[in-house]
Length: 142
Image (cartoon, rainbow, N blue to C red; front, side, top):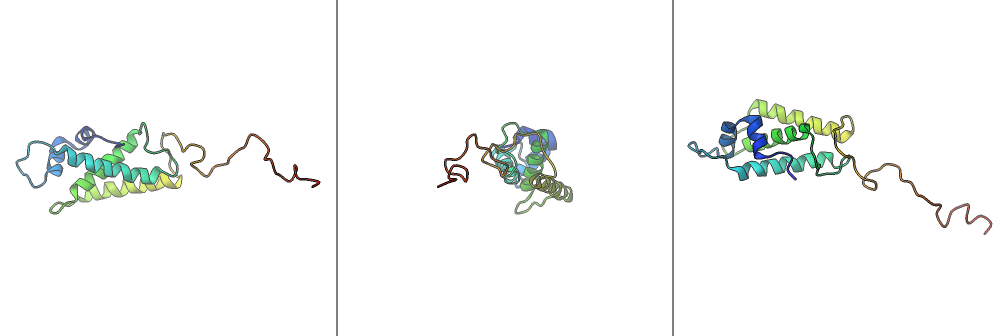
């Protein structure tokens, strides 16, 4: 599941930039290459999942706005990397900030508003509802 859409990218960075980044070789292009933007967003979402996987059930069913923003930032950076195009200093700084934020989430320093991992998926305590068949108490005297 992608955490952002082409429209999210346009809303955040503008149609002109998305047009330029989605088809950098075509100076007269008038249409955003949606498939290219969607691929960049999917890649960004997969990277986000890699960071969130230890603490949250991924993919997030209802990603908070901060995750959508992170996906857009990472996708923008990826779109700007090309044969003849390079991310700006601002794009590089924004990506670095997002990666640091994701690392903080992964380490537990920061939390997001999303469901945590289900039982059995994490390393938390586990409880049993009955005594095991063979224990020190049941085998006492044998």
